[in-house]
Length: 147
Length: 102
Image: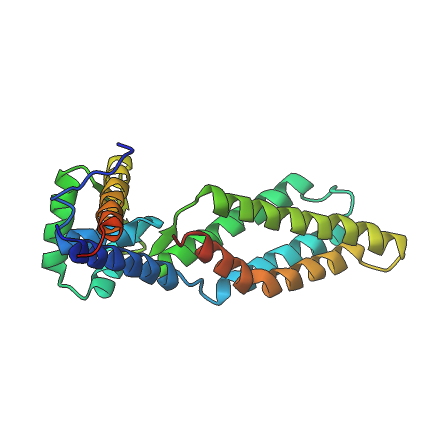
């Protein structure tokens, strides 16, 4: 094995890895579906504020199941599941923390302002944030997998 | 396997490309590998079978909603072997750079 051959093999490895990471592009309906789910979760909070109807566990359970179904459908469409590394996990945790912060601040703020349908408004803010961050988050996840 | 190790079996160009595509993923579907490598079903099957027999990849066939799906993933052994091989290549290149010129 001469150094030129080794260099070419390394270039091929790099190009192929990049190629598959680039191919893993989320379909447009994935972030839209996520945004609809999160808005519905917020609206459910106003429709059933005390959880006397179907209950919070059922609403959150349905939300989590829908999220998992969306992820599975998107991966099936792409034909790829990107690897979960420590960096992608850290990125996902940061995203969840940001969403939770917006949820808590939004719910508290809208309640303080005494606006009607505070949970729905918080859900709308989270849905907008989901759509806004979908592309940058996906790019960041892809970048975290590049060597 | 943590250090550099040149693996003749992996170094076959088609196999190296397959492993490089699998490395940043949990799994890739057969059709995606075939389309991106620009190869035929039979040629890719042959290489995947060889990698599977060597314990470097795991092949899972499923049928969902009437559609067949074949997912290929690197095994821990395959991932370690691929990383060791890439490290060996990097060492060859680095050693050549260190050598003083004529």
